[in-house]
Amino acid sequence: MTVNGKTRVCAIIGDPVEHSLSPVMHNAAFKKLGLNLVYVAFTVTSTELKTAVLGAKSLGLKGLNVTMPHKNAVMNYLDAVDSTAKSIGAVNTVLNNQGKLIGYNTDGSGAMIALQENGVDPEEKKLVLLGAGGAAKAIAYQAAQDVEELVILNRTPEKAKKLAEALKSFGAKVKAGTLSSKVLEEELPTTDILVNATSVGMHPDVDISPVPSDLLHSDLSVMDIIYNPLETKLLKDAKSAGAKVVSGIEMLLYQGAVAFEIWTNCPAPVEVMREAALNELEKQGVCL
Ligand code: ATR
Image 1 (cartoon, rainbow, N blue to C red):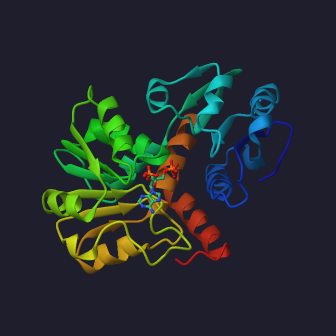
Image 2: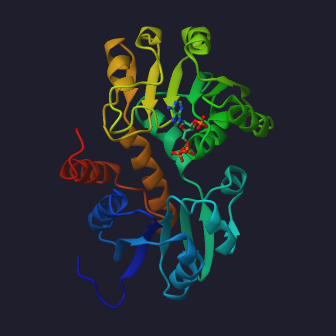
């Protein structure tokens, strides 16, 4: 594309951001649709967050993605935050709507769309979510609206309980517990969907899994939100057990697709975005 006087900018802000897959993913999508937009990454430290966000507004950036460690703090500098992002307490996407910055959270919806687009329908299903950190919280808010039963298991059970308590008003039956072999053994036989939102199995700890392999079964659909490695030990074990598997790149892709649609009002070209993200992962030496 030609960068000209009318080109608008979208950016990711965070620290670190050098390995983010969002620039290649969104630039491929802008190019595919012939949009006069360009996407860049800015390293922004916590002390610079306020001036960075106000600067983005002054410069008329079209949109922002916000990553660690600013997903919570950024809310202080926006003109409005949508209700889902407010409940989650984290913003990962900002739209500059004619000079007003509006915050959204596309992580949870991205995860649930990733499941659906990969043939896993959450309706009337039991979903076990591993983890109660930032990513798990976003997924839990969306899952509680989509599934029949949600079980949140975490190494620190108090965090899972607090999260479950906050989800009481949603439709699903929600319970919480400890992430342990004993609890997994009780829960997994009746589970339809298992989502790992802990960091267990992430590079370099590629030989560990949050779930003993003998508890996985062929009626399960398993999604890991880790994408380095692309096929975690959990996903390898799940595949061997005959379960359906959805890789972490899918959540990344669909949270990006939802952000793209917020900025552009155009349906996201997901195939182009997936290809760009996978190419970049390969360039970065991630095992595909
Ligand atoms: P993110 O923003 O990626 O969700 P996070 O908020 O730091 O990151 O959350 C990490 C999650 O992985 C938490 O649920 C954490 O469990 P605790 O709340 O008990 O810390 C989980 N986690 C990290 N290391 C773990 C391990 N070795 N075993 C089990 N759970 C682990």
